[in-house]
Length: 361
View 1 (cartoon, rainbow, N blue to C red):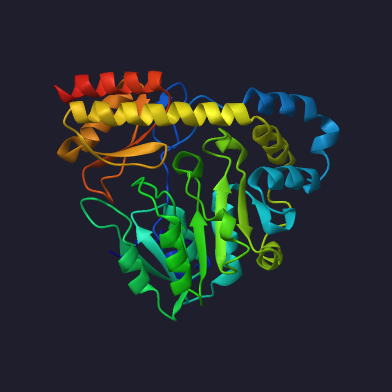
View 2 (cartoon, rainbow, N blue to C red):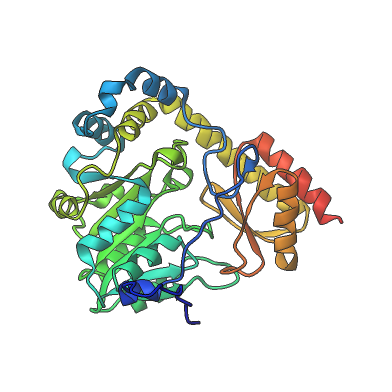
């Protein structure tokens, strides 16, 4: 379907053809305050109290008047992720990690392989770069990772492969063995594994960046750490690749407050462990509750569950919003499906109670 371009005023200059051809991405972020936010896979209880305290102690007029310095923060974050400081770059959220990855390695007209449905920003930045986007569908109805289809789609023309593990919105994961097979097949391409939900799955390729020079791994502080507003991520790879990433990145894209908060966040291991434990218990509670209501779902390795609501998907989403509970309709790419972020067990019980009441109408 053709994308309708906005009408330009007389004398205006048209943007690049790649931008003209793109569909706009407009996430529904307004009107969320004061509601139970189960729509964006955020941490539903807030960040560690240590983060707030670190910001209070470290924030003064002098600190805000100078450009960020990353040395101490990089050392602390490297220690937490068990990598060397020269094996990653800070990024302005995972979004910039994807952008820098594409800007560094993908030229106009080159092929980028992504899956569908998946995180929209993979296609977004590939299209901005003018690349040729090759999408592989997750098979219906199970939405399991289509390893064989991905392997067959990788050719000498493939410049980059971008995968989420676990995938958003399906919640399905990729094994380390499958990732290794993809990297072996894609030896002439760069491969980015987005591990935004790693803490809930426990499966990572980060340990392989030294062994596999075409591997890149991204992590975010927006999910388990509860710092989505700070916009901080990390992009990891072999140290030789990091030098090129730096060349394609703005030198100060990550602000001082974000790295200050990150140092405090990784120091609070108990908070992270307790929150992950709570979410995993709540995820099980949610799945059992959906089963009791006769609602099918996709087994998830993340902090969200894709529920197969069917024809009532939009109705259920809207009715939940009236109850002060936000969930995300994904019918436009997974027919009849609603994605539900997993919060605490208390929040999950509230959600299930509301769904049950609506479901029986």
